[in-house]
Length: 234
Image (cartoon, rainbow, N blue to C red; front, side, top):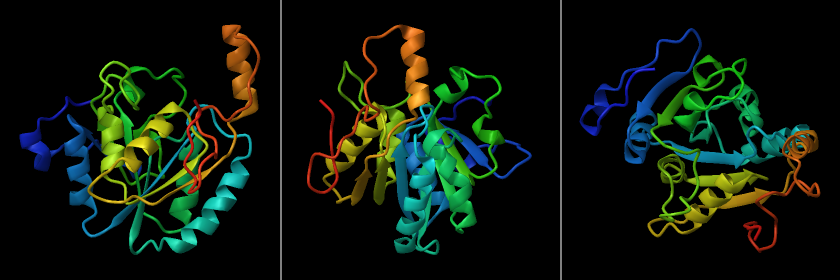
C-alpha cells in the first residue's frame, strides 16, 4: 500500500498494479476523492447505493430484483454507480451492475486495509467488478463523529459525489450519510429507502458471540417512518 498523497499531487495519483479491473488510489482528504470522481467521469452523474455490508441481507435476491427495475430509470450512458468498493453485503450488487453495462466505483475507508477481520476475504483490489476505487484516509469506517458531530472523511466523500441515492436497509453509517445528503444546501439529492433486513444468521451469530440481551429484528438503523422514504431509528 503506497503512502497517502498530498493534495498538490492529486493529478499524479499512483494507480495500484493489480491483475484485475479495479484502478485504486488513496486520497488524503474527502475533497481529493470528490475531485478524482470529476477527473474520472466528466459529465457523468453518480447514483450511490448504501446498505448493509458485512452483515449481509436476509433476502439479497429481492434486493437484486429491485435494483434491476430501478436501473431502467438510470441509463448507463448518463450514470455511474458508486457503492463501498468491497464485495460484502450491498457490494454484492457490483457483478449485476457490471452485467447491466454500468461503470462501477467505490469509496471506502482506509480501515478496510487496517482492520480487515477475515484474511481470506478479498481486498478491494482483488475484486473484479469495480472499475475505480478511492480509499480515503480515515480513522473510522464512516458516519458522524460522536465527539465533533462532523461527518467522517469517508462519508463526506460519499455524500460529496452523490447525484441520486438509494438505501437498502443499512446500519448507522448509511443512516448518517442519508442525513448528511438531506442537509445539503447547494443541491437537492433525490433518494429512496427500501426496508430490507440484514442477514438473520449473522445477527444471531453476533448475539451469541457477545452474549447480548434479546435478539432484535434486522431493521438496525433505518425504518420507513417518513413520507419520501427517509427514516431514522431512534
